[in-house]
Amino acid sequence: MNHRHIRYGIIGTGMMGVEHILNILALEDTSVVAIADPDAGSRDHGLEAAGGEARVYEDYHDLLADEDVDAVVVVTPNFTHLEVMRDVLATGKHVLCEKPLCTTAADCQALVEMAEGYEGVVWVGLEYRYMPAVQALIAEVHAGTVGDVKMVAIREHRFPFLVKVGDWNRFSSNTGGTLVEKTCHYFDLMNLIVGRRPVQVYASGAQDVNHLDESYGGQTPDILDNAFVVVDYEGGARAMLDLCMFAEATKDQEELSVVGNLGKVDARIPTSELHVGIRSGKGIADIGQVDTRAITNDAIKHEGLHHGSSYLEHVDFAAAIRGQTPALVTLEDGLWSVAMGEAAHRSIQENRPVRLTEILGI
Image: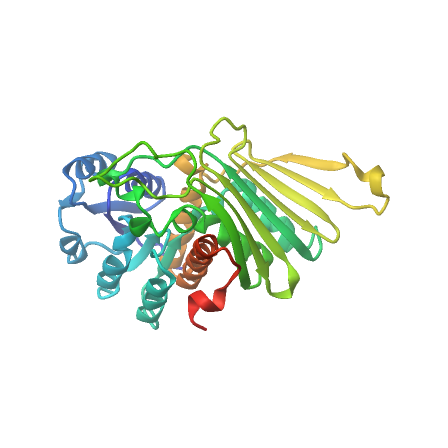
């Protein structure tokens, strides 16, 4: 078993780049030796988070040429991921690319092809899989607690998009659109929970409240702030997303429910509760017969912005680098999560169901 020290380079040191630095430094036998960002303020924040000792680059190509860097974390704006990842994959270094993998499924497919046979670990940052309550829910489902999965429902009622450097996240051309940028996390969870490929997506959504009074270079932002999305799966299971980004006055930002023929399990975040109910076949007599559990994970050494999920993600990424496990979140996972978001946007635009074969060209 290889326990060698892993030296990281971070490309992009905005809010999420700093988050990755702090999580990496909470691991054992790791260090952040280099950071790169074209924005001076972001470089300053990244260097401070790294303890003031990392080498600082303005151009990420210089970081990639740094022979002391073993693993790279790509935390640049979505629309740059294809170019940056193409350059990373020319180096042989291990890499974790933040979600969404790219802004379009076509670009994701190009990356999948580029990485075929790549010797380094390639990982996609879909850390919502690692939220403790979500992990507990997935474990129950995969253990057969609820039986054959029939329905998955995910609700996120939250605050509007945060401000980013250069306001790049205000336009769908830069992000892939809200249902790629934000909810690729939830499409990935649906796929993981159901365990089958999605077949068809139909959606309704709009920009009704947020960012309508903003202007950037004379242009008003065009990012959706609410949507319903329904996904049909092979085998007949279906999933639904309920997204609202002007609902910050909410106790639990995320709620996930999975119902099978034997029962129901749901998770609440950030209260980190799991509710498990098993049907007895007695109808109304079952109401209220639910086991409620508080979910914690003592292995988390840095809570950060996502309830410890980024820390747990980095634990597994480091294990893969050391050869202890394969990459557990793959480019294919990233591709499917983006393709579903792209299909949802097309469904809204064209007012019709969209099959994944249309998006993926298969």
